[in-house]
Image 1 (cartoon, rainbow, N blue to C red):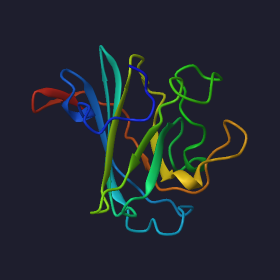
Image 2: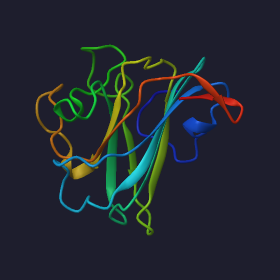
Image 3: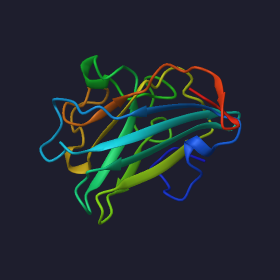
Image 4: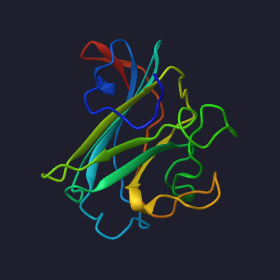
Length: 167
């Protein structure tokens, strides 16, 4: 399965059997676009023998608004997350080498989607950056985004919780 744009009906990352799961709450960046002040949410990144699964769930979005999320290679405190995480560093700046999650907020201002990839991110993806599609980075590849809310992922830790490995 390629990690492209997402499937809201896919198995969420926190439900992947036997996966190491990292969960984190979003942190709003000072560089976020106007209208993003009320965004709250959670991101899960699961790594299992089948690869990587990422799920994002947000509230406080513009109803009907279109959004994009990408795992990033640095923490949000470093250049707003720095470069996009790539499965093959220096490769194509698009799926399946990058994880792109796209979704539309519903009438209640909620948006959620899940993507999967047969490869593992290992420790390379440390933040998930979300922004409106219209704020898409249009600069040269590998330059960091400047406008978006973001969420750093905590470092992976293994411990059992509710029958699955979580971090």
